[in-house]
Structures are given as structure tokens and as C-alpha cells.
Image 1: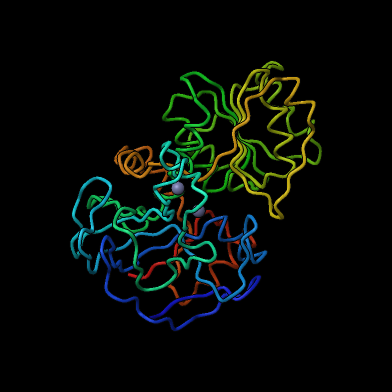
Image 2: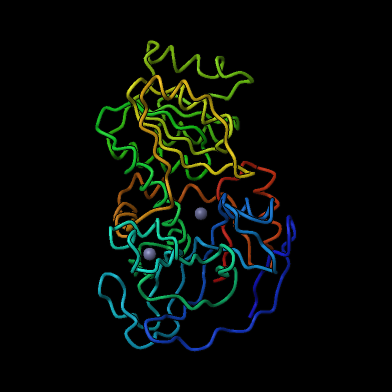
Length: 354
Ligand SMILES: [Zn+2]
Ligand SMILES: [Zn+2]
């Protein structure tokens, strides 16, 4: 079958992969129809690894995906108790937790140390025609959810989990650092949760414009110094800072900015992943403020809520509006190059295999 593999940094090549075999017990064979290019894919594309996992063999990316069931094995039952059948359209959650460990049993499968993950080494992802997946990872899509929207339920789940960790209450003020797809989805979900006002920081003008379009109260540039960057926020909040801050950028300088932007006693949720695995921040600032800092790890049980939210006109608009570029599988390298260079106002590039 047609596929694309990452051979090393900036080196994506077409590949002729074997078709997967028939689905085993509890599995479904899915025809892949849409795959989103994600920031974490970009980490692996740029550096050849992520979070200590390295690409040491030609590797298939792709963890935001949706498609149609071709065949279902015995007992191919979803989490919601639906028996999968051919021609059912599904989104697939990429993380496969063990289900047995302490974390899984405590209801935190996103923290399972024994999990597999489609699209992170060593587990090949969805940039190919067909993939065998556990039926439990499949979520049947209503007809109103396109394959692209189905693929976007994954980043939407990441945003939902981040907002869950923020424990937002209506009327809480929020600042978001980073207006990439994840930051923009967090903005939309926070808005749905009743957060107001909502401030966004991003150095790219198109992304700030998008944030305003999606209901940000204000969207500001990131200036060369922290003080100048935060000046408008401090003016807007009369020096108090916001109740909740979400870092959804590169986990570099934006962590310090986040801790400065939030009020004493506030909450900070860190979603961004630093390019080289390490972050530095001033310690006194969050300590003196007594901040609650949560590191966000993927998501847990968010697909049903993500599907429900897609039926809301505001969320549907926000989700559909993220896709700025579309490519066929054969042009995957071009899609990554575009996202890598932030060219042409790109937000979400989508690989279509329909
Ligand atoms: Zn992703
Ligand atoms: Zn586990």
C-alpha cells in the first residue's frame, strides 16, 4: 500500500508498505481518509524524535486520523459498546493504554507507562492507506462529521483535557500563549466553558487575527522582552493578572511569561513541548505566587465530548476553520515543509486519502 515514512530529520519519503493482515480479535481494519499534521509530528520531523523517543528506522507518522472500517475482527466492540461493522466511519484515538496498571485503573489512561501510540516510535502511524487498530480506540462518527473533522477530534481532545485541568469557572479570565491549532482550540473550549475575558499571545499576525475571529478579547504580539510583551495584559487586568494561564506554545520563554501573566493563587496549565526537551523558568515567580501548575499529558476519554461539541455551531466553525491547507498523501513532504516554515498562514495542514 502507499505510505510515507520519516527517515531522519526533514526527510520524508514515499514508501510501499505491506497491506495489514485481517483484523484479529478485538481489532478493526480501517481505511484511512484524513490525517492531520500536528505540532508533535513536526517535532519528530524537525529533530528526529520526541520526549526521548527517537526515530531510528524509517518511521510512519500520523496520529490525528479518521477513516472507514473495512473489516472487523471477532468482538470488535467500541468503548461505547458498538459492534464495529464494515463501512462504519470512525475517528481513532491514537493512544492504546494497557488497561491494567495503577494509572489505568485509577482512570488516568493518559498516564499509562506501558501504552502504545500510533505515530510515535516505535508504533507506526496513519500516513498510509490502511491500519489495524483496537476497536476500543474507535469512535463511530455521525454523518455530520467529515473525515477531516474526525481527525481534528484528536487535537480537540488535547484542548479539552487542558481546559479540564484549568478547572475554569464562568467569568474566569484566561491568557493563552500560542495561537496554533491547539491554542486556538483551547480558546474555543475555554470560551464554551464561560471564561471571559480571553487574552491570546502569538508572534504571527495571521494567528492573532484568527484568535480574534474565534472570540479572543484581545490578541497581542510577543515582544523582545517579557515586560513589554505583558504590558497590555497588565493594563487590561489593572496589574492583577489573569485567573488561569495556558501555555500552548514552545514551552520556552512562554513559561516565564505565563507565570508572570497569572495572578497570585492562580492556575497555570502547560501544554507546549519544548523543541529540545528542556525548559527553564524563574523559580521565585511561581513560588511566591503559590501557583498551581499542571502539566497536561495528552487527554483522557475526550472523544465522546469532542463529538458532542462538534454539533455546536460555534465549535463546528472553529474546528472546520482550522484546516488551511490540504494535500494528497503523495505530497506529505510538501505539507510538512509548509508547516515547518509557518508559510502561507498555515494553521492545520490535512493529508487526504479519500
Ligand atoms: Zn497531535
Ligand atoms: Zn496502563
